[in-house]
Length: 331
Image (cartoon, rainbow, N blue to C red):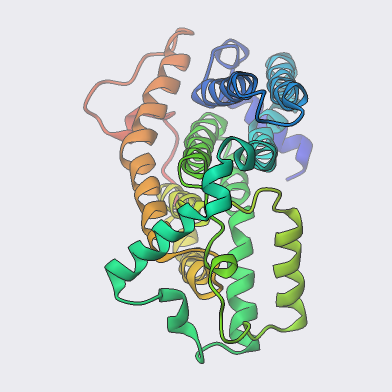
């Protein structure tokens, strides 16, 4: 199926009047982008170039709103509207590096966040969990774990492609809302507990055994990470587990196929020294919160967007599926 065919098919699943409504993903991005712009202006005496940082957030919202309005008239642009939020959350993440180190300067300079998280690991597990893997990893296993770690960037896209190919753009749009909400929740955590993570906090007796590929990926992630203060909670864990749950709802076979990769990703967050164990536990809680509470709220809100255009609203008490379009069940 060509891209044009996919765009046409998905366009049939989402009517112009429905797209004109404020879906959950629209509200989440508007709240975070505009809220961050106002936050930066309030702390403009601390944030270098605060005006530009605020303008960048408002410009991102303006771009998204323009794409949304254009897509409501042109079905072929609705795929762009669906996937653009992921690009925007990446931009928001990178912009944190221009904000958090300055508004939380005292905590960052004292490494207070890392100290708290390291003590929490010791209290819960009796030792540093990142050192449990010392002597167990070799270049091959480190490479496999590093590849698993990078799949975090592609799982939301995989879920979107699965739904678009099935012509379920409305479901995809709601899922994007939940995933974006999950991303943004972890970003709030970075404000509250700015921490570098164990690889930059601890002094290890030996470096990780890395192949050329693993070392290149490791370095590339570092180069693209403009904030570094992103240990708590583990966004990799939160977003990956939420995506796995959403994928399970649509295709349990595909979810089982990617399950080993997802488990490898969770292990890699600790084994490769990116995160403290408590970061991973917090990421698990964030994912569970969005799966159990956030997703139902998003689906209810988005069902209202469809119902307001004349489609019947889902009956109360019929479960999550009643809040989505009536399409044949997935395999």
